[in-house]
Length: 167
Image (tube, rainbow, N blue to C red; front, side):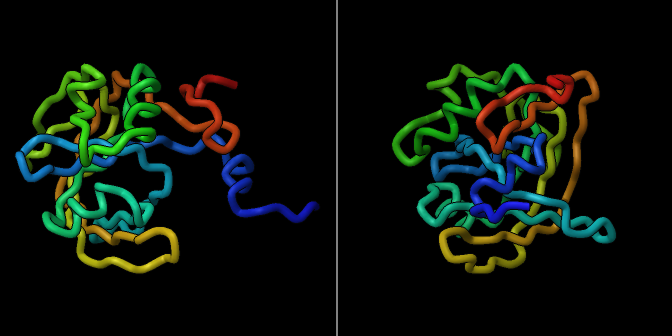
């Protein structure tokens, strides 16, 4: 075995599910951010955890609202994932810029992209400082799924985005 840096580790666990974190902006619109670091934390009760970079606009929004919808987008969202991960919602309406069709889900006014395989509506209950990121522990409020949407995954340490049938 060779010694590696942690930034290289995701290449050894590929494919990794890609997600979008959907938060509510102060004007009521939805902010979207690409999110790679997340996991299920408990099934009874349902909990998820995710980590956001300390510079992320979504971090500011979550500090105010404590509400999020984590989505697993479809393969047709590859361009949107890149667009959401390379611009800030602080000064850009990513939904408009990327021309994304959005829809509502029960229990929240945060909209999600139409091309969504899984949506997890959750409330932040705890945050933990993790050096360059902040970890959010959330109670799951509701889950929505669509089997007709093929999920997108990050391959080769997130260098490529494709469905699970890639290899």
